[in-house]
Length: 307
Image (cartoon, rainbow, N blue to C red; front, top):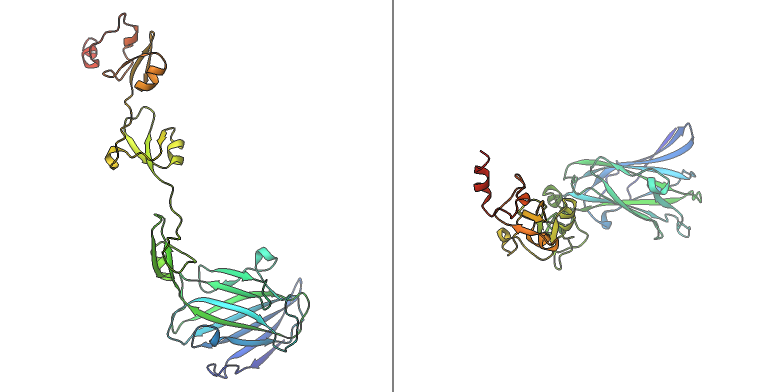
């Protein structure tokens, strides 16, 4: 069973625009769906389409809108709102739903889709965002949102309208900010900020990288504190490696004789262990710490004895 209603609410809409209110019989009960198909030739609230929902007395209702962009600007957002079509009605408890609110998430032909619901205002609103897949002039898109009507208000209205792709601050992983149209920001791998500009920079900054020295490795690395710690290294806050324009070189790991025990360690660690550090020797094989007194010849000279 269905009923078709023809509307000419706004002068820019053709009288061929059709609103179809369909009664859907489901296994779990009865639900209503409101369908609208038509053209919208502008953007913003001044071009809002308003339709009455007057046949339904159900708790949850689905609204399907199929709109063709006959204007000159791409659409990046689509907005829905509730209004009192009769005057004097209490519409404060008519809300929009998604899965987190016990209903169904909005869906659209445009992906990826995100949304923000504001049920606190009287005349609840839901804003749909699809900056990465704008509706270009001449293209057609569809949207579905779900409404909760727990008080069974039998006569109320819903309005909807598109808005253009905004130009906002675009944040990159490096922390750099650039003002771009939202679709270009997404295409460039950035995140669209809620801020309109980059002064001051609204973008989250990556964790700082400073010098990191790893065990048994004399190379100096520029790492975050988290990465250096995961590698088992020592992180020097505010210090830069010499190759990065700083003055930090990682300590050398050489032979340290603690009594007759041979260890490979740094000069500082060797001194703390009351050992004797031999910077010219890099290996404990052969075990030079067994020599009494230690043989102070270089490692290359010692190796030649065992060839």
